[in-house]
Length: 143
Image 1 (cartoon, rainbow, N blue to C red):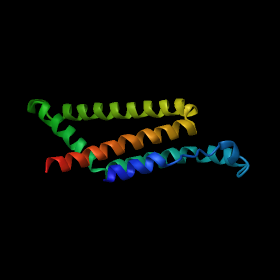
Image 2 (image 1 turned 60 degrees about the vertical axis):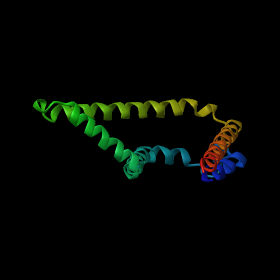
Image 3 (image 1 turned 180 degrees about the vertical axis):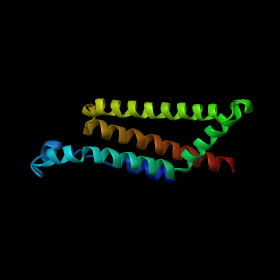
Image 4 (image 1 turned 90 degrees about the vertical axis):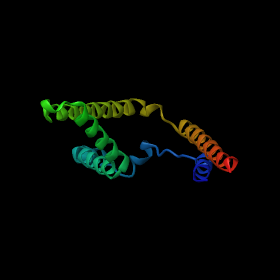
């Protein structure tokens, strides 16, 4: 029922995009403020992302699983050095893919408009509603 409720909310929710040109009149010094806070913002966003990922139990479960696989895959005669190399390569791969996702998001940002966001909301609403109804029907049909 939670999926159905969320799906119906998403289905009828309208998204509005705030035009950046309208915001220019609010703060004339916005551009200079952005330049001064740019590095601080990136550090803050990185820390925020780290904390959010650390608080997610699935992320912790994933890394414990990866560490377990690394520990079991490396023979004992090689010691823990190769396990750390394996974990480091996995971490570098994740970081590289995240950086590529950030760059791709910057490239497709101009393509995002209100019509696209509303269409995506409708699509998500339909998918969640149908999935929720499927789960509800499956529950009642099994009894």
